[in-house]
Amino acid sequence: MKPTRLPVTQRNFASDVLAITQRRSRHGETAIKGFLLACATVSVVTTVGIILSLLGPAVQFFREVSLWEYLTGKDWAPLLDPGTYGIRPLLVGTLVITAIAILVSVPLGLGAAIYLSEYASLRSRRILKPMLELLAGIPTVVYGFFALTFVTPNLLQRFWPFGTEPDIYNALSAGLVMGIMILPTMASLSEDALAAVPVALRAGSLALGANRFQTTMKVILPAALSGLVAASVLAISRAIGETMIVTIAAGGQPNLTLDARQGMQTMTSFIANTGMGDLAQGSNEYRTIFAVGMTLFVLTLLLNLFSSHMVRRFREVYE
Amino acid sequence: MTDINAANSAPIIDLRTSKQHPARLADRLLPTITRACVAIGLLVLATLVVQVFVEGWPRLSLDVITKFPARKAEMAGARSAFFGTIWVIGFTAALCIPIGVGAAVYMEELADNNRWWNRLIEVNVQNLAAVPSIVYGILGLSFLVRGLGLGQTVIAGALTLTLMVLPTVIIASREAIKAVPSSLRQASIGLGATQLQTIGRVVLPAATPGIATGVILALSRAIGEAAPLILIGGLTYIKFSPTGPSSAFTVLPIQIFNWISRPQEEFRTLAAAAIVVLLGILLVLNSLAIWIRNHARRNA
Image 1 (cartoon, one colour):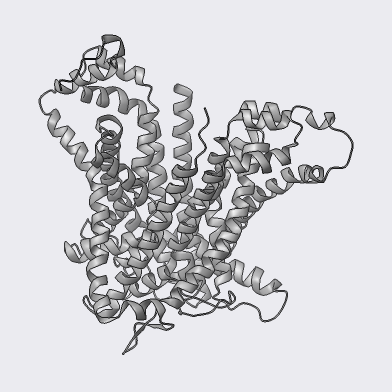
Image 2: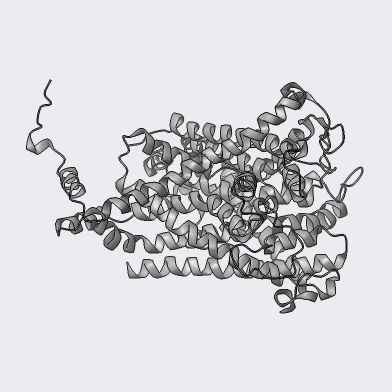
């Protein structure tokens, strides 16, 4: 069937203009467009590169170590001979420190977002928000230094209320400081979600006699829920991927425990600690980096996909 | 935002009955509690900065950037790391600005979003932005250092950091390009300019302040990043400054990490002094970004 021509009034005039100008390329413009396309392709090549570079050695690793042993083993000692390769201590370490970081960053970040979006005057918001974002700009080695030389000795060990006090390398201070590091990300993403709730909903709730607490809790937060969940999931993914704070403040020993007063090793700090030495390429220690890196990459990728899915699936559309 | 604040300051509370309602106490407390959340964040920031200054004070002098690392803490400085940072970040900037802006221009101005590959690029950039930095280190180690045979050099470090910050640069540049009003483009095309002339002479100049701010923030992230560079071998004991892209190198965050890991108290002091230098560099860059943003707003 021949496509019917739309009547002139219904055609998109701007796209016609674009179509004409796109056809009339000047000399060399095709080359420039090719360059721009190539730039955009770099990102795809990066992803393919990451997957390929992880996959090769990881596959070789799993030829020697069964996936079952890797996922269920309770001992992580890859540098011994013969080594044991159970990733559970690293997973538990990652989990404990991430949980502490989330317990700090999600409530504080959400509170800060509520204050900035619902209560702060325009002037104090303009001052407070960039100041809070300075926290996000502090290098992670600096946070690690702060956790190791201030939080652990001057807060945790000095004011520990009961039982044995934390070791000098412990998961607690790493998690607490990491929570502060993620706070601005959480606050800023949550604030975007809250700001997207239309003024009409607030006005409607207030007009029905609800006070601002009720409006915030029963109208604004539910309306912004998908954005808030997405922000929290992204915060979890940041905490799992964070390296230097843990490497500096939580020590470098794999330790299968839930006791946050002890030192722990996470997936990231294992990679950093092992990668520091000059490893022989092709050795099994060298390959463990890639196996653990693959686990880390898959885990964060799933979280990110879940987060963007949440935003798309549950976004309330307001007209 | 103004409307909300105006609506919120209306005297609703006065209209309510005086009957005690459980939500009433919460209503009084919520602003205080949420304000405390902001205050805690800022308090930690202040404590951190003060603590670093206090710890580093005894060693805070030009020695930190004029002396090379040494076995004795009193003699040591971070000169090689300071210049290493400048070399690596210089190359990172030279690489990530053209590639990042080019990709953003393609995605905003040229790409037809009905094509699957263009949507793939878009989703891909968003996912890359959330990949942990240490994974980029693994990529650098196996592809750049070993695969391409670049070795543990300035250029391998710069390429690794470029790939890491590229998503941030692309996202920020896209926002800046998107903010350019389409009337400017239409006017340019109406005057007979081609699409690329419009991009080069109208869209990019108008988007420059936004792009510059985004690039500076991305580079400050790269300056403070240690994890990926540890993997590609930036942790060697280096007593000379880099002389070119193929020199061995170390950078400030890695030198700091190295000093923190040592047991002697003197090295911790030195680490704190080097942190002050690092924070100083970041402060200058951030102020520059804020200045550009405000300056552009005034001229707009």
